[in-house]
Length: 412
Image 1: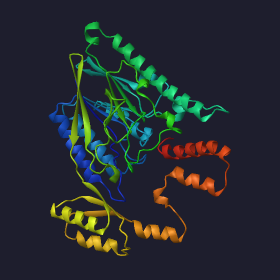
Image 2: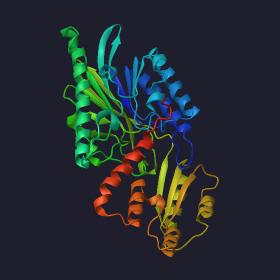
Image 3: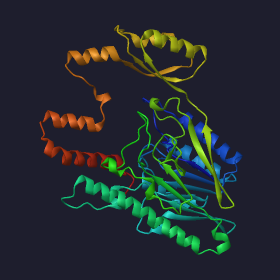
Image 4: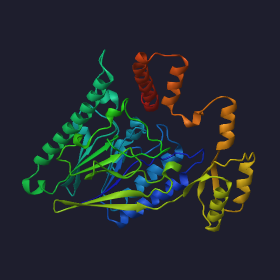
């Protein structure tokens, strides 16, 4: 049986205000063709299908059109879990209808562990068992008690994640054991998840949010039971193994989510189970919209732009001017250089003017250079908050920020 693992589509995401629907559509068309060409049996989508909890009509149209197209292909099943960017209730609203197309969706943890275990059949013969664990929120896996330290809270969170995966996997193993012995050895158990594993690599500007309050919630590979034959993860946008273990992987996002990912090769992963053995292959995703980041003085920027124009490039550009001379009309000058080409400048950072203004105002940083947590630290500094009080205030702030990011407007 052949599986294709992908994640983190972030349908509807923009780049400095630029809509990217053509790019998303090109990827989905390519993916449908690849599924057909590779004769994929099962598509696994490990969360963050959409970029927001309220996706646009166009983002929804791309999603449903793709699922309809896949249902008419040789792909027998699609399994989707919700990520931290998704609205669980929105994703699962059409669950019963999509089930008629063999699209299985798990949006949130339920009281019944069996809801996260999906047995896939072909002609009434069991082919695989999927432990489809969605993004688990704080409230799903731990209860807070008065007087707990930050470390105690984080340890409870990691334990909650580990216990949940083991419970789901135990249920999957019990289902597998219920089938006749000759069949059992042919049935792989596949895990899915949307979380941040310890040592995971991220890229600047990729939009990957902290999932939990406290870095200790970056979990190790040991939370995944040994009975799992493959673990398909989402959340991190760079394709990578977890703890160098071949069968525990992030597929990464299929397109660059920001200029920090410019030039990064994107992948989907194909896992082929045959005779109780697996073969794992990474498939390169084409670059549908090139992103180029240029940094340097005017000579360096001009030379790179001339090169891109000569190459007939259609890249979107982020330019950071770091020369020593102030050029007030830099944008006009650069636009003239690329006039008539397919290049498009999405952002210009004029570092010298910016630093000059900051110096005049006696400021050493800008809001765009700060994270939300950095801004809060500046607020604490401005109000002379004592160090002894900061840890609890920061934790409360992170909890509030996380609640706002995860608020599901579709839930009633």
